[in-house]
Length: 340
Image (cartoon, rainbow, N blue to C red):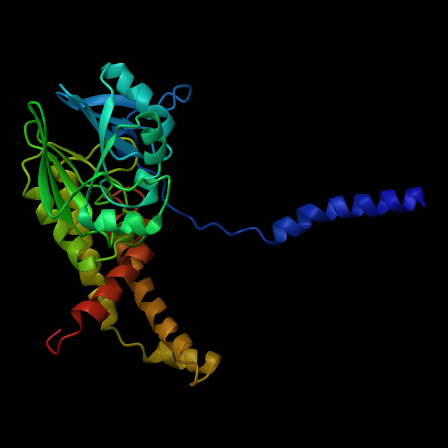
């Protein structure tokens, strides 16, 4: 009997890899990050976990290679902008490398947890912390009741200037990304601009043009960014800031994706519909609609990859998602016109 149980146990162990391999995901072939982008990246010491650098006098950026946060030293203390969870354990150490002043204020760029989900930790270490946010974000966070994203203590509507001694920061609401609102955070004396989830310097945007919930506003954000007199742009992700050329390049890319999706929307889909009817039946309207949309997205994706892979690093990772977002925007928000 003991031998029987051993045999059964052995067979079960042998069968485990077979079961796992049967469910393995087939990964697509994707272009690697370009050498140019790697050369721009701020090196992060794995043993330390982060790097902090002065962007301009009194304005510093900290990154772990994935997320970014900014802080400004003032006579009254340190103003921190965003507290991504992955950076939270490093923020106080990074500030201490630069100044002995405490963190006295925290500004929320928007309400998403991946950028401010460490705020609760910062508050516990600084009980008198002032938390600043625009009215839309404040209302959103009141509804969430998330201890990791404490409700702001200072709320403004539309725009405000945050002054601390000689330091000045201009805050202005935008709506290119989050439904509750986003902030243009501008340091006029230093010509530094912070606008989270707008672009990623030299690289593809995240899925669906950085998860935008307002494609119309996202398409306008590039002109809004360029209207600021900035030298350095902090966008929240990866390990280095952006510049004006990065914004101009991404603006061209987004426009091209939109125009390509628009052309794909006008393509003849009779053959695709015929194939879908044969497979799903005439009464399965959603399946037919998906077949048409998938073909349009695939056409857009193919063209975009061919034109942009050598211009923006690893653009193919989210080209289908970006095409889908642009296609939806054209078909449902803009609407096809008789002269299109």
